[in-house]
Image (cartoon, rainbow, N blue to C red):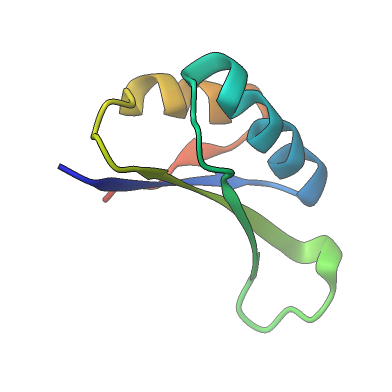
Length: 80
C-alpha cells in the first residue's frame, strides 16, 4: 500500500539535513520533496516551518523511526 509521510521541521536547514539522511537511514530511493509551510499571517521566511514529503510506494517505512529522525531536528512526523 502506497503511503506518503510528512515530516515537519522548524527551518530549512533542518529540512535539508533530514532529506539528506533519509536515503542513508531508510534506503529511500526517490528524492524527498521539501516544501516551505508559512505560518498563518507570516510573510517572513524565518517564521516558516519546512515539510519533507517522503513517498513510500511499498509502505515499508516505519513511522516511529521517521518521527524519531524528525525529533532529532526538533520536528515531528505529521499524523496521517
